[in-house]
Image 1: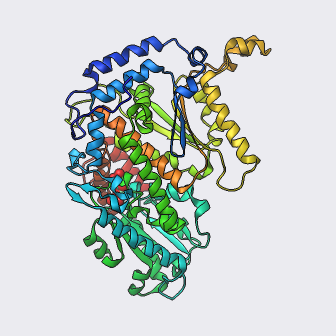
Image 2 (image 1 turned 180 degrees about the vertical axis):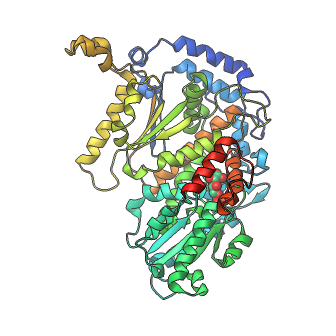
Image 3 (image 1 turned 120 degrees about the horizontal axis):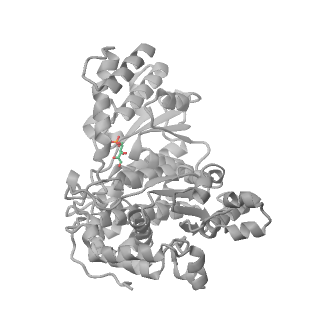
Length: 554
Ligand code: G6Q
C-alpha cells in the first residue's frame, strides 16, 4: 500500500491526463465488479479488526469509514489513483499560494487566513501574513468595542443587535458557525443574518429591532451583488426613517469587502471597512473578515480558537501520508462512491441541532466547487464529478427522508457527525440522540434480512416491506464536543476533501461560472417588469407567457 507521500514536483492543479485514461483508474474500476456481490455483513464477518483498520483519529475527530463498501484493495487502488494524478503536487501548489484558480487567474489561499503570524504565508510570491493579522486585530478591537458597549449608536445607546447582510459565501459560513457556536455567544448582543432579496427576509429580521440599537455589517466581496446591495439600501432607509440624519449611517454601518471604492460610494467610511482579498473565494471566506459577525457574537478569543482548529487540519492535510490523511481519505471514498459506483448523491447528517445549517453550508462548498462538467482544459469529463449534497440534522431527518436511505432504490452515501458531549449540560436528551446516531449507521450497513424478518414472526405478505437490504455506505465522524476548535477542524476537513476530489477530476474547484447566466438573464428581465413592458426584450414562449401572467397578477 502507498502510505508514504511520493515526491512530486510542484505543479498547479491541472491534470494533463484525464482520470479515466489512467491505468490506475482502470485498475480501480475492476474492484467495482469484484465487490458487487459482497455485502458489508460479509466484509465485517471476514475481518474482526475491520473497524479499527478503517478508522483514524485526527485532532478531536475520530473517523470511522469501515461501513463503506470497500476493502483494503480498493483503498490501495484509490491511493494509487491519488498518486497518479499528482495530488501531492496539487496540495503543494495550494499551500504555496499559486494561481490554481485558472479560469479566473487567481491564487487560492484561504489557509493564509488561519496561519499563525510568525509562520508567514506567501500568495503569488508575496507574504500576506502581516496584512491578514492586521485585519484580524482590527476585527478584534471592533468586536471588543461593540461587546463592551464602548461603540455607541448615533443617539448614544448601546448596540444590542447586529445584522449581517450578505449572500452565498458572504452569509452561509458566518450564519452556520454562529448557530453552531451559539452556546459561546453573548446573549446581550444578538446577531441576525439576512440574505434573500425577498423583502420578507429583511422585514422579519428588522421587525422587533430598534434602529438606535442596531448595527449592520454589509458583507460582500464585490460590493455589487444585487441581493446584498438591495437589502443594504433598504436597511439604510429603515435606519434613516427613524434617525433622520445621514450622519447616523457611520455609527450603524460597517462593511466587509475587497472593493473600497464601492463601499465609500455606498456611504460607509473607508475606516469602517474590513478588508479581505481576491485570493479568498466566497465559500472559503469564513476565516477572513467575512467572519466578523461571528467574532462579534462569540468574541475574538473563541474566534481565534476556531482559526487554530482550521490551521491544525490544514497542517494535517499538508503533511500526513495519504493513507493516514483524513481529508484525502474522505475525498477518495467520495470519488469511489460518485465516480466509480455511480451514487449520485451525498447526505450529511449532523446529530447536533447547533449544526442545523451545516448541510446548506456544505452544499455550497461542495456543489459550487465540484459541480463542473469540464476539466481545467475545457474537456468534457468522462467521469461523474461532485455529488448532489443534501442533509438535515438527526434525529429530524430520520422522521423525514431516512425511509429512502434505508429502503429506497437509490444508494445514498452518508456522513454522520456527532459529539460525545452536548454543548450544554449532559442529559438524557443527548444520550437518546446518540443512541439514534449509532443505530442508524448500523441499520444502514447491516439491514435486516428477509430470513430475520420471517423468524421474528412477520406475516409473509409483509416480509418484503419489512426487509432492510443494508449495504448502505456511511462515514461516522465523532468528536468529544462541539467547540470553536473542533468546528474549525471540521470545516477545514470538508474544504480539503472537496479539494482532493476536484484534483482527481482535474477541474477548477474555485470558479463558479454556473451562477452567471441566470444572474444576467434576471438583469435582462427586470427592466421589462419595472417598466411594465413585457415585450421590451425577446423571450421564448414559456418565459414570455409567465412574464405576462406575472405582470397581470402583480
Ligand atoms: C462563493 C460564491 C458566491 C458569493 C456570493 C456573494 O464562493 O462566489 O456565493 O460568495 O455571490 O458575493 P459577494 O460577496 O461578492 O457579495
